[in-house]
Amino acid sequence: MRKIGLAVLAAAAAALTSVPSHAEELRVGLAAIATSVDPHFHRAGYNFDLRENVSDALAYANGATGKLEPRLAESWTQPSDTRWVLTLQPEAKFDNGNALGADDVIYSLCRVRNVPGSPGLYTGFIETVANVTDPGDGTLVIETKGADPNLLRNLSYIGIVENPTGAALTYDATTCGNDNWLSTADFNSGAISPGIGNYRVVRFTPDVEIVLERNEGYYGEPAAYDRVTVKVLPDNGARIAALLGGAVDVINAVPINGLETIEAADDLHLTSAPSTLLIFLLADQHDGPTPLVTGTDGKNPFLDPRVRKALNLAINRDELVETVMGGMAQPASQIILEGIFGHNPDLPPYPYDPEQARALLAEAGYPDGFGLVLSAPADRYVNGAQVAQAVTAMLSQIGLQVRLETFPKSVYFTRASDYEFSLYLAGAAADTGEGLSIMLNLAATRDSAKGWGGANRGRYSNPVTDEALAKAQTTLDDAEREALIQAAARQSYEDNGIVPLYHELGVWGVRNGVSFEANSNLLNIFYTARPE
Image 1 (cartoon, rainbow, N blue to C red):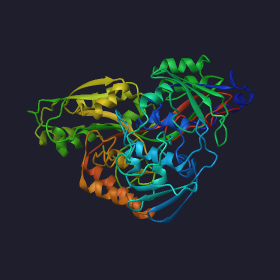
Image 2 (cartoon, rainbow, N blue to C red):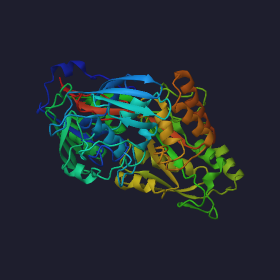
Image 3 (cartoon, one colour):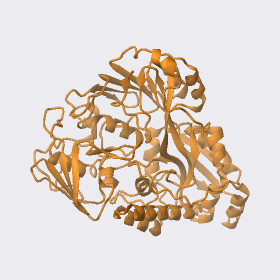
Image 4 (spheres, one colour):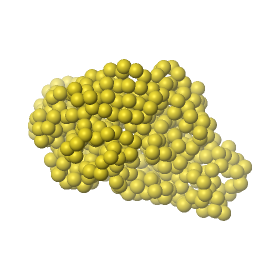
């Protein structure tokens, strides 16, 4: 894996560089932006970005330190295994001047189940919540179905919006007796605010631009920049050119072929962080025919574990990392990144063995392979299209007749959620800074009521995996909980339920004179940016 300094690469040059030409404005070029201002619309990376900047949650899970930090809950206690008492931030106010209340939190937790058209609900983060009540003294009481050591980590991803009903809600697992839900369209148009955050959204143009202004009434430390203008620059070359030409101060997802260019520029530097983002393949494992496979007499070949194992053995992960990703990734044979709570050190890497892969296909009844479409997003992950091309070639080498189809991310994940793909490429991260969240999201049986399997669009399912994860959700002892997560990781590994490829390394290009923190969850957090 290539090493890049986490600080300014040319310290002397940085020391002599003035602040950006518009010190009051931070200009950012991103490969993509959120698909909605609605903080509850889609559990996905760039939507997390915007939510973190404009809609605070009760707490913040710091990916760098692994610690929980207060946000709209200024403190909390746990009187029993299943009871939490949160003291709300008394200075927090919405844009209209109304103070944050417990009813706003209850409304927000109820709303995450009631977002029409969402391609990925946040319900998994509240699956263990049994009841939420307002004692009327500036606190909030949350009761869980069982012990949940990660409750606050999970709630750190749910932005709190204002309750528009004018009435207190009684929490339940469906609608909380309410039919007055804020609409995603009103969030996007600016008719309603997404919450209380360091910044306010002043303009949102889908797939084009987001303009933010500092929230002068924010209860916490003020953001350094008055204004943040975020431009969508999906083309790698255009993104680098914008940074080199001075049109933007920060870019994300620096492509492999742009690293040396930025390193060589006197007025620019790179900053990076290891990320928990796993890039993976997932095969359709649902009973019955699969849509984009031919030559199998209508059978779904991926129901056979030998075929799934053949996929894993066909992938040369070292080549993907070194050649396609330029060293900006770590090969992966399991879902959880090494060093993250729940990683199983006893699972050996999948070997690259195309000969054995071909033998497994023959043993499964496919000596001549079969026809297959590999589906991938064209504009979501660093070098994602090139990775998909390389994977297509590797799968072809074991006798599969593979055709690659790529789609804009704006339609890709909706189609994946509608089960239109037979084998697809995607990514998922350990959102909360530990391994249980990504295992529940990717390896648990897909269940919208529980909020499990949101990223498991291939519908891998094993009750042994589910049982271990369910127990981990309610186990307070850290060692016991980690052992359960590791057991689930082993089961999904042995099932070959997922084809892990690599964990991505996050890299940003930054203009000297700007301090911008690399984030291990690949979030673009603007409120920590500072002029130097």
